[in-house]
Image (cartoon, one colour):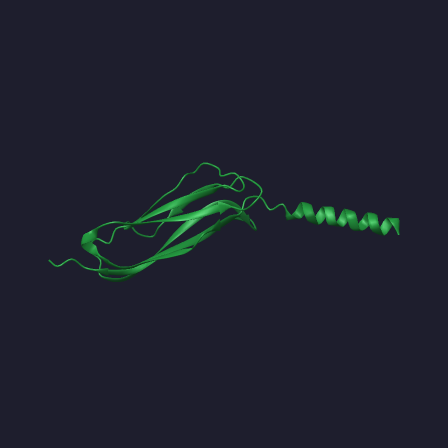
Length: 132
């Protein structure tokens, strides 16, 4: 009986050690809809907020968008467990018309298998072009 209890305690300790996951990211939201916007009003900005819910420092390695109309600003400094950060995304609707949807790729130091974890953020809306 003592051996079984010892084995169970050792197993629970080992499982608890496995639960230590390193850094982990949680965003307040993964998408933002700007709604209907006028091209003449210029740049649109949204701040995606996130928290390191893991047990090791989180680093945003890079943030990229597929076009020159979307830019992202972020801090590359490691974020301690429990702390929050933000990624500021700016969209410029110049020379655009109609619906848009852009994705922003966020690369972190979180391991997912043998690759670094990527999170996809999305912005969308409808652009009303300026009268020329």
